[in-house]
Image (cartoon, rainbow, N blue to C red; front, side, top):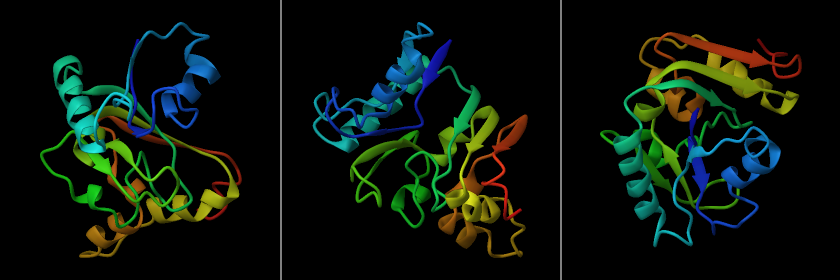
Length: 179
């Protein structure tokens, strides 16, 4: 099994804020995952831009095209990975990964795969729980009038990722209350 992280916080490698460290502590080490790829940490790259470029190079060299399964959470604001509403990374084209600055939730600097990269997944599984995320789920799944798709995507980035073969939303009762 090969794992790729959709985003990572640009902090030192040993920081408890890094997604990969949290995932290792929660389950990756228990299942013996060893082919785990994530963006370089701030202790390994000079800037979030350098980290994004390095991660993009790794995806190109070792990624082999599509992702089999992409699992995404959704934030209460509708963000996925580190693609936040209204942020410049939403507009990235011809890029696999981008630096994200001024994240609305700490830490402020991150690296995220782009919509173009995320949309290379065969299956996309959204895993969402909790009432605070119900409005984001409603907005992500809502029909959008013609001509308003771009604005809706900028408001709710979770609208921007679909699987090539399937897109499945796994919701608990609280996250589903508004649909």
